[in-house]
Figure (cartoon, chains in turn brown, yellow):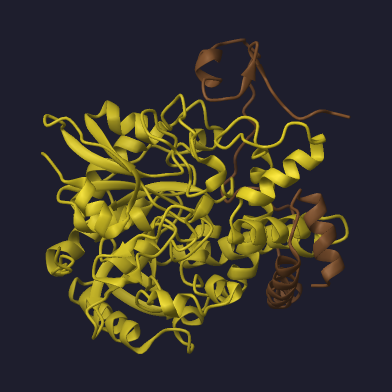
Length: 90
Length: 437
């Protein structure tokens, strides 16, 4: 795979790759995608599902509930005044 | 029962976390470390989750505890399940109890090791592309991956949502019948578990099996594995099981189709690890939003995780998705059709589990990423199709390494597999690992 494409994919995937990683993944992914070319000739069945067995949509009423108390969920998070901290937006 | 888990773990590195359990426990079990658990750190083999103590048990762990089981440890694994040899863990590499210089298999390597070396022990494993039967084969134990949807995935740290299955590993075939009903069943927290028919055991016996020519008539299987396989076929015949070679032409597309689907799903699942909620949270909060996530993920994801994220992101990208992701979904349907045709006449498909015995770590280090993906060519077909499959120990190589035999049955037909495991166990002498402390 071209190094430029690997850089582009890495940017989308939020990965900052070193020079050594860029070189290595270019070779690896090139080799893997070359092997995947056999999919072009493979038979396929249209109207395919996203799962190997049919899974109907499971809808339910939107009822508020508290399966796990919020303080339990946030006990190991870096919180400030009960809010999860994150990096700045701008 | 008191176990000296510390000494055992120093030797085999099968646990990422463990503790003593009450003496009066009904039974003791371990669980792969991608199943969330109260009381134990849960890392899925990744540095990015170090320090994560979940506030709840995954449904299969909860059910095992409710049945009287005591969870003694979380088992080592490839990071997020990304591997065939358990060498991609951030927390040491589990050692094969038959030869400490060899792999336990992956990605449920620690679970297979625990099943092999601890007495009266059952371990919960997880399979996406073969991660239960591969290590079961390498460590000489029974491994069962049920149908996709048979066991709730609630609390499972996702790798591939359309592929992940929770199952069992044990030295005793009888444990499969004992514990599959415990962990199975509908769970409102996982809609995929709610489509399953009731699990019925003891109804069906295996009478006829098919061998796919495309899987076994090539050069991909080592001589010692092939010899054991042929000898196993004779054993099946002696059980009055009919055997016939069949053609399943789509099987050769399983590896690319599987790796496209699996990495596509993995790359979206791993987007949630951004250093704000789980595990490591030591990033520099003065950075901009995107820069924070990027630096955090780049620092803590391992090599294979990055490779799979890149591959899965690429195969879903505009301009490539039709050629890769959408085509892979279509190919999966074609492979399912191939299996369904075979199951019109046969109860199961049988092949060796892995094409070779467990390799040494120095051999694994020389394999390319693609070499390692291709090693899964026997275990991927039942996994991409969501079909239940079983590995039984069926022989030993000249070096004394275990060899596995794999049976795959139609969706929801775990009963023929469990029946086979027990019949096999009554005629085949399974060896204990002989590495001495």
